[in-house]
Every structure is written in C-alpha cells, then in structure tokens.
Image (cartoon, rainbow, N blue to C red; front, side):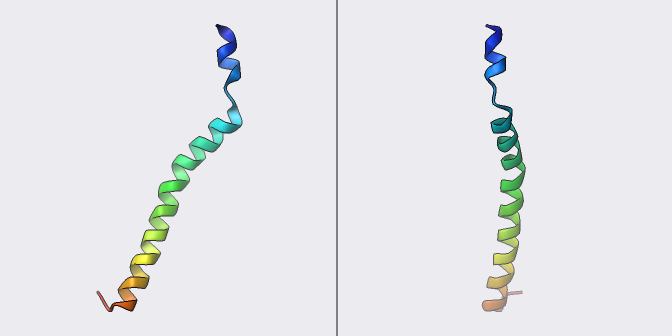
Length: 45
C-alpha cells in the first residue's frame, strides 16, 4: 500500500502544474494580440 505514493512521477506532476498556469496565460496573450490585429484590420474601436 505504501508503494503507491512512491510511484508518483514528480516530473510529470511539475509539467502538469506548469501547464495549468501557462495555458491560460498563453491563451490570453494570443487573444489580446488577435483582438488588436482584427480591430486594426476592420477599423473597429
């Protein structure tokens, strides 16, 4: 029973946590940039 906690891959856990923070951040940046590009192209203020 105690061996289960040792099987947790800390590298995988670290990558999952980092992706939780990076995904919304990158999505927000991409959305911001695309919004401004399309606002400029279609002259929407």
